[in-house]
Image 1 (tube, one colour):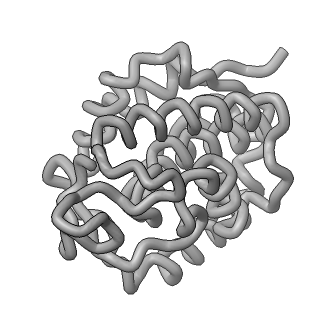
Image 2: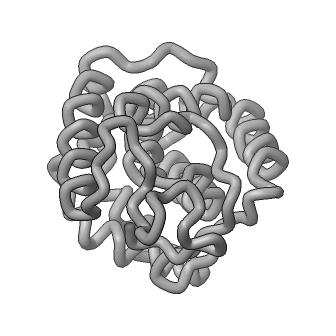
Length: 198
């Protein structure tokens, strides 16, 4: 895995950084390919039949569980180790629940961003993307969960986005910049990616 982890072998097979999984795969490349295929299939199922929820943290965790439960026992559960990636340090594990409560409470207070004009909607989605990325609540699979949740949230508000048609390398660059406090590219990404449902 590409994370830097405080306890690098926590939840991994002895002598490796390969996460313990239900299929007993102990080779990192094989696990990555298997995980990618399984989450692609489950992600496609979510596209057709989104999970019903309140767009709260339990809903967010349920999406992670749906995507990863065939592979990991801890799917849908908050991580217990601190992680970082590409120079970005994510929310300490001990603070995840409290910070998530604040994030999703704000989302609810803003009526799930429903009935907003596009420019305001893009601002809100950019901010929500940044704070959920900083949260990074799971041991693995944060980006895929975030994109699946965002797809459903955006559609619920009367807009649309299709991440499978977008430049994921550009999104990664924009995400890294946003983690450093520069959100211009990320906002531009969403401006171009989000359409109004007709």
